[in-house]
Image 1 (cartoon, each protein chain N blue to C red):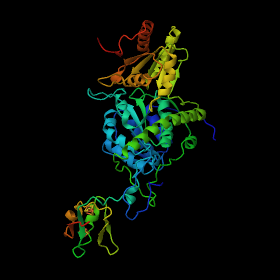
Image 2 (image 1 turned 180 degrees about the horizontal axis):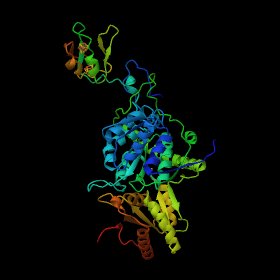
Image 3 (image 1 turned 90 degrees about the horizontal axis):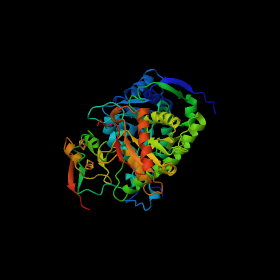
Length: 396
Length: 105
Ligand code: SF4
Ligand code: SF4
């Protein structure tokens, strides 16, 4: 095995995604430009124009629905397939997302988290990706540009092992257009880590013809749904193994689906996903200095949902402040809903409160985390919630 | 039990999978249409009159199944194991070489 010497580049989150797709040696990219995803596919187009990639087919399509359709066709034919989108574009893909997972095709996509319109917005918000919760796609939320790069490479390996598609999710502008140092992996080491894809079935073997997306009557449809769930369960193991392997080879360990930060002796923790957890970790350091016993729990993988890891965490704390940069209207924050539901039939019952933060790109700062900490502390001392769902930034 | 890839079998109709373990990982055709013939739905059957046929293959292009094949002599044949009797071929044929006739079973 060649020695690992990272190549450091200062890149945006979007360029990190494009480089990862290049290093993964994707065969086909089909995408439609949408702000703030556009520079991902521009960069990939540039790789092709400069002759930096071999055999990469870029399919120019007229919509995101077609982009995903083209990816499904390519993936069914055995290609390693990549695309990227954002917000309304992802919503337009929705119908096709089911086709990818239902046909068990390991397409990898980067979604740049952006608020859904109206009001028209291009800023960060997780509701676009979380609205795709039930499509059978795995979902990884990146905290920084490094995690975008690492996430795409790992996603291909995981997706191609369990034959399910995966979404790597980064924040609009906060990551997509902000430059940071990313440690990239030399091509030969990526090749060792990520060998060429072995498709479930070979569509080009004309001796063994079959059809894809065939009819499933009530006698058969049910079993295929069960198989997707089994694959999701299997994915938890694979995520652990691939994340561990990644750590051993490249020094960044992703074996945990929930990254725990200073939670060991914490009274309560802040739980959330994506770039806002960078702010939270910084705030935890500040709060620790001030005597708060707090920690951060960053949910990396939302699908499959890390129920078991959440239970272990919940057993050890008095409170969990769930920070949702998203909302399910008529109910509550989506991560909160999942976390609360996961713990219901267990003996771990910390006080769990939902803070709705940062919707549509609203700033979320260390000072905000401190205010939430003060509130959590008071709640825990009293032993009961004030409100269950707190529209934290609301102008009152 | 290999239900995924099969030979076209004489008289075969439907494979019944009894346990979830027998199912293929992805929903590629169960038993494939090589085993599960789809030609048992129809009431009318296309009949080709070679003397009117001009070998334009429009029927071959339009058949949705596709049940039309091109014979060695260049005229078209119909694979009745798959023809669902929709009549598109008869409708599209420019010389009216195809007629739909009631099938006697
Ligand atoms: S009737 Fe329909 S299915 Fe049958 S051969 Fe004609 S076009 Fe094809
Ligand atoms: S469309 Fe009519 S004329 Fe043309 S090939 Fe078919 S049967 Fe013959």
